Image 1 (cartoon, helix red, strand yellow):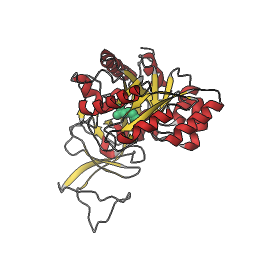
Image 2 (cartoon, rainbow, N blue to C red):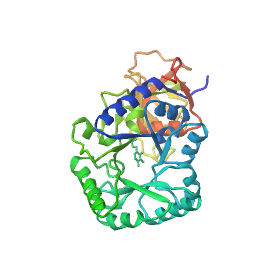
Image 3 (cartoon, protein in one colour):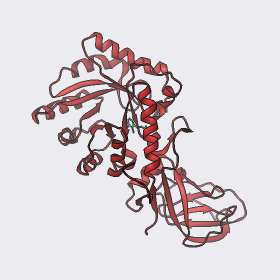
Image 4 (cartoon, rainbow, N blue to C red):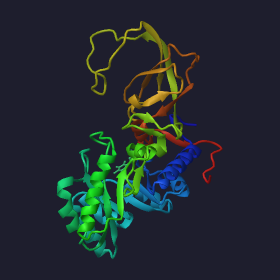
Length: 361
Ligand SMILES: *Cc1c(COP(=O)(O)O)cnc(C)c1O
């Protein structure tokens, strides 16, 4: 067996998808299952589809291609605004595009039409988070123009909150989108889909505050991790232990907690902070920033504390731990979104499915 490894608990992910689909469907909200944090892992993608998800969303064409080639049967949404240079390939792989630039819609229209296809398009509107989207006031004329293009079917509008600006989705924000829908419909443009949310917007459903016009959420983090980073919470009706990282100890020594000598920056150009606790027992694990975000992993041994990581070494304070660690022992960690993202992306981390896990449910 190789280490580090990431143990994927399909049963816990399945329970998360089912809970999310069930609460969203009570509010007439269709769930797009977002696969990007797992790099489009086909086993996980199939599980989402088998658990009631009809559209999979990913930001990268390569992931969508991987899922399609592995036989995942679903409609696919491209979450990132496509690059002009990838649109010719994208019209062959993607069913629904999120867009925010007229030039891009024109290119989708052109390639789609010449391939004899018709691609669905959702216009992203920026209502304040400052990532993608046409600025609210400028959106109307542009969408009306775009909806007339051939080779595309304009199906709706969407927004993304809580990603750059960390703006919290509220009922007021949702109502701004609905105003746009009304305006467009008064101008003869049908808006079937209002794709308003990601994980950060789940509280609107939980608190029964979601306007009924909102009918699609694109959800990744809640399904995969049971957490909601924007609102800084663990979602109590979901499973948290969906992915567990294991790394192996290669050194255990008692050393001072503050470096000796003049200090500059660390190997990655950062300035680490040191707390003088005298001599402490520390373990070095064979994993590093190339595989994880060391600020986003949490030891299952609650008395262990992560001190720092360089590209290939993770240093853990085990001074207070009640476990008598030995060289070669493994330590286990939960991950946050950014650590999971890096872990799934790292070729150096083995991905294994929990034994006894039934992929068919
Ligand atoms: C990643 C992404 C999502 C999913 O967000 P989560 O916070 O993981 O639920 C939704 N929409 C877009 C456009 C995204 O890029």
